[in-house]
Length: 181
Ligand SMILES: [Zn+2]
Image 1 (cartoon, protein in one colour):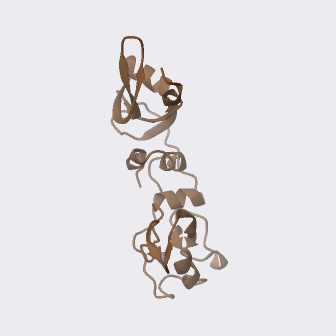
Image 2 (cartoon, rainbow, N blue to C red):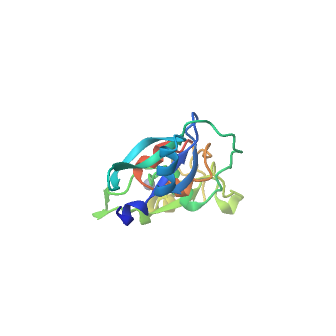
Image 3 (cartoon, protein in one colour):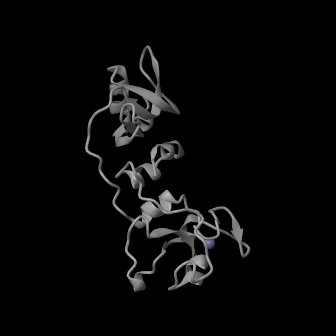
């Protein structure tokens, strides 16, 4: 077996709801599949080989049955907001890779905008914060969007499913579709 493949991480989803439950090791994921307790939902494209066999290594697996676990709410964090908004500016829609003022925009060019500014009592909550580019954030300043003549391109929402929003959102791209907003 190749050890690097085994060091990967696998997203474990609940049965039927497909809600992210946790992030587990490859050996644990393979054990759950071999024991008939989980199915592979997304493959990683990697394989582990034994003397006789070759197993596809999953990237996402789901339990065969639903387990009743208390829903754990996503804690607000700056990183979580950026991941929720996929690094797209809520005001102008610019995203990483686009060119602005002759420069390629990168993820580090984005910040968190407080829709109701902090100086006016706005809180660090999922619904009061969104990803914004530095230019829009600067332009809006201490104003509400309508005062600045700016429009929200979407309504910022609290992640419905998972306390794992940052961990899942920082994982492979295929994981992101299992976060619900
Ligand atoms: Zn912008």
